Length: 304
Ligand code: GRG
Image 1 (cartoon, helix red, strand yellow):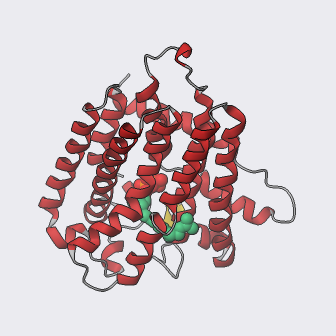
Image 2 (cartoon, protein in one colour):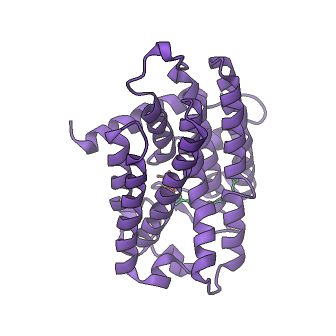
């Protein structure tokens, strides 16, 4: 089986996990429940849950159950939670008050389908349902301290000192020139923080040491930066069909991006160099996971 098929299979496996954690669409609030589930089922690469599970495996592969490993199912509520948070951020990012986008993952955006009011509420609801979902990991392991730590990482990397903080600065500076140092701050938080949470939670739940968790944070920070620069590149070079959303949206919104600051050729070279740095750091860890390495390389050359 080729690497591409392998990733397709893994995406399908993640979809099965996510499905098990989606809420039933019953009761008086069923409109918003439908909006939440619809947005979650709209597709997407599922990069964050896959990175989480592969980082977990990096630290557990080859170890015996006798080494007191938790059951791997402890990771599943967190895989669902990180995708819920990511999806909630996409729902809000597309709103008329933010990017005002009408197409995402090849479908009408949540606000177009359910209305502005329901989209705001679906984003809010998914965000907090993610925490409820993550807390279900307590039932699956006796390593409750690790679950507590993972929830704290999830909240911290999502909140005002993480993704939301990055988005605040991004929104505030839209249409204005942004110096490189501020752009780095935005990218590290807006996109990097959730990727850091994904990989760190995998490491924490697998029982990695503090030093290993810090190394994973640095690796994920590189992955996040490369991921966002590639996003900027694709906004200029890809087609709407490839991306499942309109291209040229950064120009439409007068956004300073890595590409407008550094030019497309340097942006491409930097994505490759930053990803290789991530892989170099990954080699410094004691375990090995070729699939994870391949995934990090693929993210740097992805076309959607
Ligand atoms: C309500 C949680 C919440 C947040 C409000 C709107 C907002 C704050 C944050 C937006 C952050 C954002 C959209 C960052 C961009 C990250 C990014 C590159 C997204 C694209 O991710 P992919 O390519 O998308 O993984 P798919 O569709 O494959 O899942």
